[in-house]
Length: 251
Image (cartoon, rainbow, N blue to C red; front, top):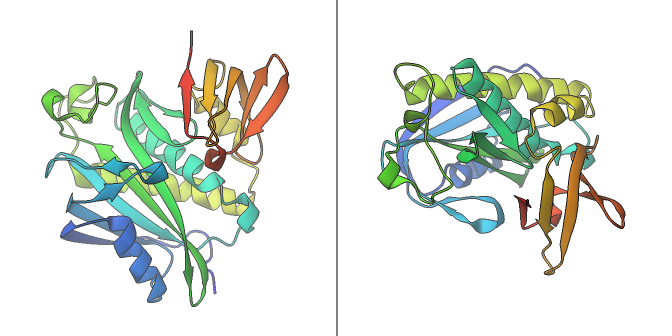
């Protein structure tokens, strides 16, 4: 049976694992309840969206996964990565950083990526569950960044001292759980809040599609289903996170 909204999270810390998502997926199949959070001191084989690799030097990033057992209809689950990104950005704002979200699930400070999300559906004996993986660069130095478009909390304006990873962990989990509970009560409730926080909306973008095609136009909204609405010369198109390879600003 699915857990009700508002369940308190339980935290577990492991020294090292290949992937916190894989670890939590195994726990889900074994019957772990909604609310389990597993943080790794070091993740050796992390993955991002579309199986992109995500690796960091030990001690320089917060890497953890949450187990959720939603009661919301499965058709609304595409909101999970979006609300997670919004929750992470909200938590970083509360800690003193000018964080925003880029559709569908990147967390930015300025124009640079500080965090990413990977949500995976897992079938378990008690029903489908969602494993939500979150990675935030915390203490990474400039020469440790994986790409020039990345950043870390220690490199950005914010509090005088970079928050400890456990402080960031608690703040992000609390913010994500609050949005998750709101979404469970009303799956369409987050569209306006997400759209207001999303730097993609209002920009001219190029959407790269899996088959090799592209859409180019203005991102005008995020609809109630969590899809990006792009106004092109040929009309409006709605694209879901699973329908795109990249969304890039142009111009």
